[in-house]
Image 1 (cartoon, rainbow, N blue to C red):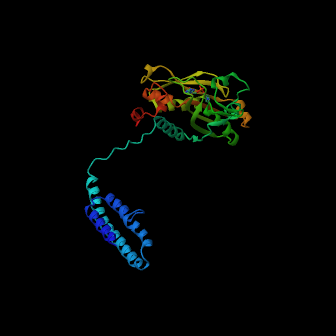
Image 2: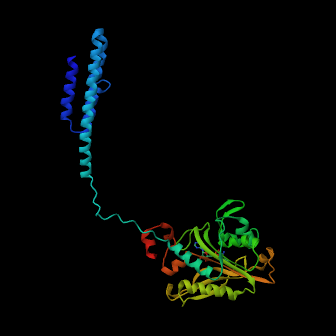
Image 3: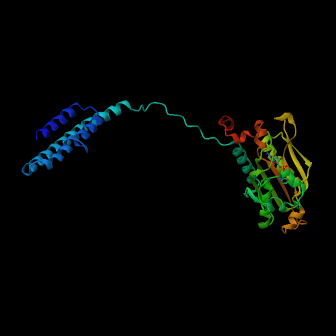
Length: 331
Ligand code: FA5
């Protein structure tokens, strides 16, 4: 019997000394845990004479709830104390300056694309997209490449299977449009092109092109030169000169390469932007557009070249590095 009151007195003394919630855990274990002192006393019950058992059991239960009650009281007191300690040590200084978030930047290529879109929609060209993973027939056959023609070697690309390639030129949109639309047609597209190319300062295996084409009655080289010259002056300044020299592409006749020159960069040297020409009459006829009534122009230009010239960017690989020091210069 006395060991019950001894245990309670012992627990009470320990609780008075307890400072932390962790101390309380230990005390709880020591007296009320599975092998706690009061728990073990319960096991003596069986060895007592039958008439003593009820009184012993009752005393033990009272002792256990007394210790539990003391534990709870002490727990509340210590928890309050610990909370105010935490509040004091972790207080927030609301006047402290925050961490600055990096300003989102628009990629210089995207800025160029926006300029191109507003220029061509302004001239009444409708923007369309076609897939990067293109059918061989749109990338080559529809553009009048005879089977095995060496011009395809200039645009060696990544073949996915016998019928699909990563498109080498955004000109691949033409066949898709001519299948569905009849003149007047004025469309343009901007997108990635892929070529199996040795990468250097001015060539990527992945790069962007803009292609535009217009088919209507009486469309001539004069319209082509007018549109490209206006584009050059809009992008590179009013003093920009343009040059058109004969060149070969299977899908135009005549074909030209298109270059610009301005005193503002490269000491006025001629810089090639892309290819152009009048849509080949065979292509028009193939799609049921009578070439004796209708004619059209088409051109395809490299997009990276434009900001490279405009801002004097000397290496096309900067566009893909995502270095903020580079990108932040254009915003
Ligand atoms: C073409 O791709 C033709 N489809 C252009 C065209 C369209 C001609 C319509 C006539 C009518 P070319 O392979 O020359 O042509 O590429 C055009 C432009 O894309 C180049 O002048 C260059 O600015 C850009 N370009 C071509 N290959 C790369 C490359 N590997 N990396 C970066 N830019 C490139």
